[in-house]
Image (cartoon, rainbow, N blue to C red; front, side, top):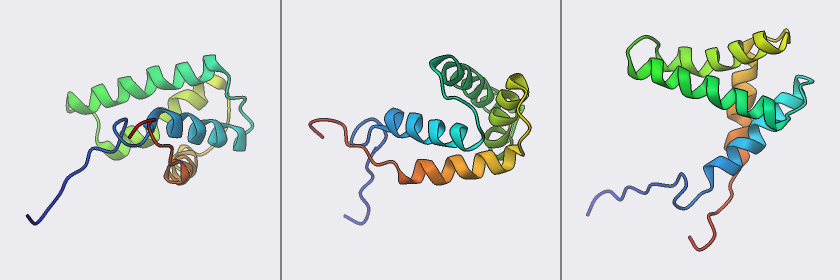
Length: 102
C-alpha cells in the first residue's frame, strides 16, 4: 500500500467548531461582534459562493475572498477582503478539535 487517504473534516476533526472559532476570532480582529446572526449570515453567503463555484460562475480564489467582501459590505465594515480571508485561513489552521470518540 502506497497511500492512505483520511477524511478528517467532521470524521476525526470537528471542522464546524474550528470554523466557528476561526471566524469569530477573525471578525473580532476587524471589530465585528461575532453574534449568531452575523455567523449565520456568513454561512448563507459562504454556501452561496460555493454553489456559484459549482455552477462555474466563480473560481475558488474568488469564493474565498468574495464571501468576506459580501459580509463586510452588508455590515458596513471597511476592510480589505483579501486580508480578512488571509487571517481567517491562518486562524482556521490553528483549530484542531477532535470529534468525540474519533
